[in-house]
Image (cartoon, rainbow, N blue to C red):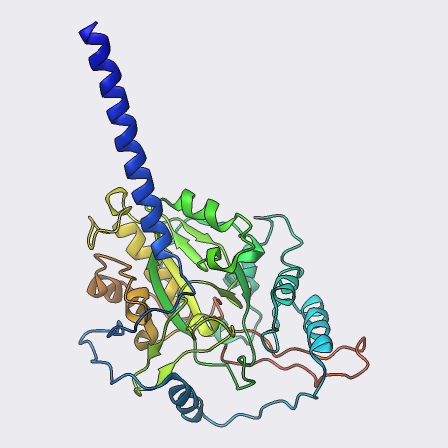
Length: 380
């Protein structure tokens, strides 16, 4: 009798402990994914190649955004005819039907308009049916005369790669202009994350349809513990990786783009988000864990080198976060990462950009002919 009572008590205790661990892991992972809630700003530091550069004093975002645009070389901005909001929505949908790589012209107000934007040609395909070239141009797919055709020989390292296109509610278009109609094309940025959970659990979350914007989150790329590279969101699209965020460049200007009237500005409109799968002991809110595998560092250096982004524009989620809640990637060795980066030539196999919305004869009022832009332009 006592033995049976002891067995029952032990089973109940194990169930309770398992439940507590599962809840804690879920809360930790949700903390990693972005939230639109505005928190009090905290001091931040950008991750740069050693020695680290001390960030300047935080400036008001409106003023900083204008300054960051002024510091860029002058560009000819295409003249866009004044049209009604209804025509803007129709114009953007038709443009994307013709060219899925096109930027969205400007954020549309209203949830219905934002959800309709996800019903593009990419969204109509079954999950996982998109080709690798949609995420990374292979050498064989690069035409003669492309800058890559004369690049140096690539390193012999080649990780496993797999494509898992996630649910379209968890990513969106990059925007040509912000909510106020100002230019939103800023130089590309790479933001490093960790999953705070298993790669499979993270992938299942991203492939689940989330109609509530508070639950929408994503990375462009996820690197598993064995170094396998998983492509989730095409580089010309906007992954929802860092909600309330600002990046301070070497010139001291604060860079962020406001693409949602209710949410704070973020770096998402011009960022490429890459996440490392956390170790099993990292599925908590603890400030540290056992770290990442050498295969993950190799694959991370390999994939980031293919974006062509300079070292001073590679940062972390913790560095750009303004909520004071993000810690990732924890236990990350910047020196090891940058050392491995030196072994790979920088290419543009992963172009973090989109094309200006193009004209179409279907519209009564045509838009100026599209042309490629060299710089991309957030979630929520």
